[in-house]
Image (cartoon, rainbow, N blue to C red; front, side):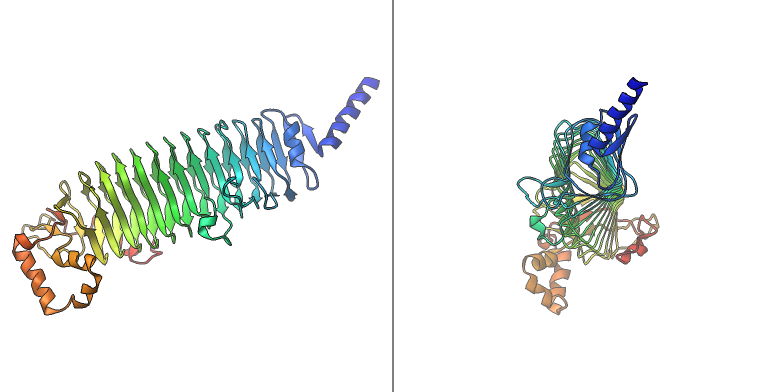
Length: 423
């Protein structure tokens, strides 16, 4: 009996020291108690459950465990440092409001900082708010970041903010169903491969995604809107960019810059400054995209040759294609594209135009190089020059040329995208 009583007193003392209770592999923290103490005392594989309340702490998780918020507890870093730092593999963080990191860009202050070697981290269903970087993830493989709401320090200038999710030198990441706003860039990806980015919403940012030096990734079913730029995919190869929507971005919807061996399909780019901005892109397949009601449908330049561009709908863009080069660019060689301003005909009724579509002519090039020419576009002199240029090949400007333009759009639902919120 004395031994039993002594063991009970030791257990009670441990409970009082921790400010929590250990029940097998579970630790429970109540308001007024210390999450950090419970984390320090927990063993690898344990679960620390935190009840609803406000906790002003900085956590270091240096062992595999689950940190679980019950009824949305709030963890604040009081505007200093990182709120949570992960330094172990197999850590799960779920169900918290994580806020108020420091604002030191050189220290990369974050709501959650996942250090090198912290493989298989899972961060899901949290609100990360008023943090410099929402999540900084470095040299950690097979992480899952899912279902989080991430907002930055929106009172800072864009250049002074961090990014919503930063991935550096990782493989196998799964970035799923996050909603990101008011950071610098929504998702910044560098030297990170074999990852999946699916179902994310990115808005009110510089770039929805800023994506560099990364290979064999899938970018699928994401929505990027009301940013300066939507998806910026730069210096990458072997990408699948599928089913995304980019609308209302002031610069571009989707940027393809120095990209090779990739498939870009079934995307919608609508009401952007440029639908697609394509620069130094080769050996890519660009198909079945809807490019509608942008100021420029596609801005194409800088050696973007040898791409297969087929089955796309180019509808009601103020300028369908802006292209300045020394030679024609053939598109639509296999299945043809639809162009809403095509003025040709289909006498044999096979669904394809009988004469090729040229996306630009000599007058278009003059307007792009000398914008003041616009004031004379409807003048008889300019109309005569346009007609003469079409009749004499020597005066014809190099252009994107679709030899077999389609007479009807591929997509039957295209008209609902004429409104910015038509989706």
